[in-house]
Image (cartoon, rainbow, N blue to C red):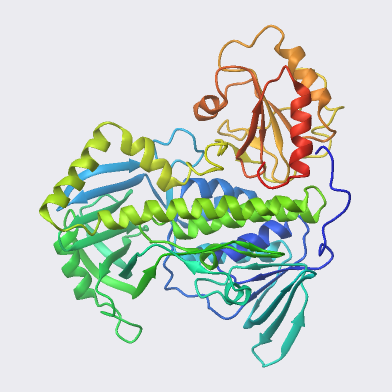
Amino acid sequence: MGGLTGGQAIGSDRPVLVVGAGPVGLLVACELLQRDIPVRVVDAGRGHSAHSRANVIWPRNLELLDRIGVTDELLAAGHRLAGTAFYSRGRRLATAWMSRLPDSPYPFALTIPQHDTERVLRRRLAALGGTLEEGVRLTALDNTADGPAVKLEHDDGRIEELEPGWLVGADGAHSTVRKELGIAYDGPPVDVSFAITDARLSTSLPEDLSHYCYAPSGAIVLGPMGDGVHRIALNVPHDAYDEQNPPPREMFQQVVDDRAAGRSRVEELLWSGSFRVRVRIASTFRSGRCFLVGDAAHVISPAGGQGMNTGMQDAFNLAWKLSGVLHGEFGEAILDSYDSERRAVSHQVARSTELLTKAGLVNTPAKVALRDAAFMAADRTGLFQRKLAPQLGQTAVSYDGDRHPRLPLKVASGPWASGASGASGASGDGAPGVTAPRFDSGGWPAIDRDRHTVLLWPGTRTPPADWPRTRDRVRRELPDATPVLDLTRAVPQGLARALGPRPAVAVVRPDGHLLARLDPARPQDTTRLLDRAAHLRSRS
C-alpha cells in the first residue's frame, strides 16, 4: 500500500472492547482477531436464546462472511431459498429470484436460526483465540479526548474500570453504549407489532421460496427453514400478546387460513413470541473512538429480513477500516467514512422496508387493487427482478451514491500470500510484476482480505495490441506488495459489465466495493489514489 501513516494509531496498544455478543458484535471481534488486533468481548447476559428473530442471510452477506471463513459452515447448517414470492388474497403477484442474480457467487438466500448463526460465530471466535465474557455489563462510559473509560459490572458484583483503546457498541436497540454517549435515536413513524413462531408446517407451498402473503386483514410471511419447519410472522394489534401470554397455535392457524396462499396446517409451535418495532436510526455511528453497530445504531422494519444483514455489513465496514488504522495502514480519518457510509445505507434500508411494510398493510379495495397491479406490472416488465431482488439480496448496496458500488468478487480466504505480489512477482505468462490471478473453483476472482486490490482489466473486447506493455507499466508503478489481479481470463458477466467494455485499472476496497476506475494509460493516477486511500480524509 502506498504511503503509510507514519505510525500506529492512538490506542493500538490496548484491546478493542466489543460490548454485545450477538452476530454483529461477534463478527467485529472475529474480523479484528484474524488481523491480530487484541479484543475483549463482553455480554450482559442476553443469553443464547432459541427464540431468535433473525433467520435469513442474504447473498451479499454470504460473500462477506467468507472474510472470516464461516460461510461453508453456515451453508451446511442452513436451508437455501431461490427467492421470495409475493401474493395477494392467494394469488401470486411477483417473485424476486435470488437464483437469477447474475453477479453473486451465492445466488440464494440462506435461512438459519439466529442462535445457529451465533453458534458458528462463537466457534470461530474461539478458534481465533478470542474469549466471550458473559455476564459482564457496561454500566458507565466516559468518552474523553484520550479515549473511552468504562466501568464493567461482573456477575459477582465486582466493578472493573477499564480504558480500552477503542470501543464498539453492539449491545442492541436499548444500547447502554449509545445512551452513555448521548447519541440521539430517532426515526420515521413506523410502529407495528408482530407475532412470530418457528412451527412445523404441512403446506402445499414450495419450500425453496419464502412467501409474503397479503390480505385485507393484514400480512403474513412464511419462510421455510428445512425439515418441515417454517418461520411464520404476521402483524397483530399492539399488546395482544406478551411473555406470559405468547401467541398460540390456534391463532397462527387462523391467520394462515385467512391470509396465506396455498393450503397449510400448523402442526406444532417450536416457540412463539411477539415484539413491537419502532424504526430508529442513531444520529451518528461514531463518537471519537467509540462506534455503534447493528441494532445499537439502527432498528428497521423486519419486512424483507434486512435488520441483522444490515448490522453485519456495519461490522465488516468498520472492522477492515479499524484494523487498518490500528496497523498503521490507513489514516485515522478513514473511520469517519464508517459513519457516513453506513448511516446513509441504514436510512435507505429503512425507507425500503417501510414501503414493504406499508404494502402489506393496505386494506381498502382501491389501494389493494393499485398495489397488486403495480406488483404484477413490475414483475412482467422485469423491474421487480432488476430492482427488488438485488435490494433484498443486498447486492445493490453502494456507498456515496453510485461512487463506490459493490463489485461481484470473492475475498481471499486469508491474507495475500507473501511473494504473490510486489514488483518482483511474475504471473504464469511471464509478465514481469503481475500477480498470478486468484480465482475460486467457480471462476470468481478473489481480492485481498485486508488491503486495496488493483484489477488490471483488458476490457470485454479483444485486448488492444499494447495491453501487455500497458499492464506491465501500471504494475511497475505500484507500491511494493500491492495485491494485483490480471483479469486476462474470462470473468463472471456481472463483473465484466461493472468494469465496462474498455481497458481499465480498477482499485477495489477490502470489502469488495469499487474505490475508483482509472485510465491504464495514466499509471501515476493509480499510485496517487492508493496513497490517498492510505491517508484517507473521509470520502475516498
